[in-house]
Amino acid sequence: MNKKESSPWNEIPLEDYENHMSHNSVGQLEILNFLTKKYLDKIKPKICLFLGVAGGNGLEHIDNAITQNVIGIDINQDYLNKAKERYIGKITSLELINFDITTNAKVFCKADFIWAGLVLEYTGIDKSLEFSISNLQAGGNLIISIQSNNGVQSVSKSGIESLQKVRSIFQLIDPDTLVSKAIEKGLKLIENEESFFPNGKSLKTFHFKI
View 1 (cartoon, one colour):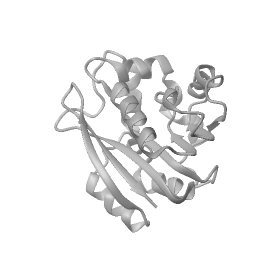
View 2 (view 1 turned 45 degrees about the vertical axis):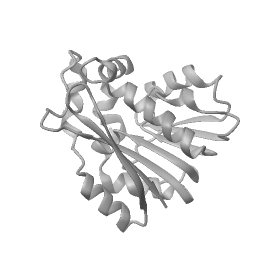
View 3 (view 1 turned 90 degrees about the horizontal axis):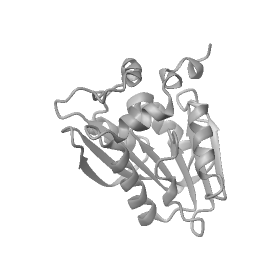
View 4 (view 1 turned 90 degrees about the vertical axis):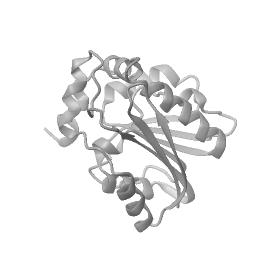
């Protein structure tokens, strides 16, 4: 069994994941959706790459008149199947790829917009940055959102027990380490912001350019 097949993410149904993320005590799905729209509207990208696309939260904000290519990558094929079902008729250029970005920095595109919302906690800073930089065009934008616990436990209790399976691979990302490593690799920090969840945690979002 390879690393991709053995990932605990492949044991979690999409319905469980989305119900957990949208639970009143968590509130992550709504904020990530809002941020996706905000940065798509701001950057108006032609080529988008979504890391950990899951069921496609936020893809409804793609404007086909502006964006020519949309690529979504996820480790779970079932998630991608659902994203395809939801968006294949709405996003004309949609391409969905089953891939583990921690295995290598394979080039799938040269995007001017890469979105990585709550991905680095499971893939690590170094591998995620290496993969992203390999798939960014000159002047491209990398948007990374990471979780800040603010003293609250890492995987929130929503009553959906299957989500506890990812505890073994979850690691909080230190914002200062993320920024310093990104700068070391040639990225420039443009801006950052913080959004708060109902449970006291927050989402820190960083906009980098290469």
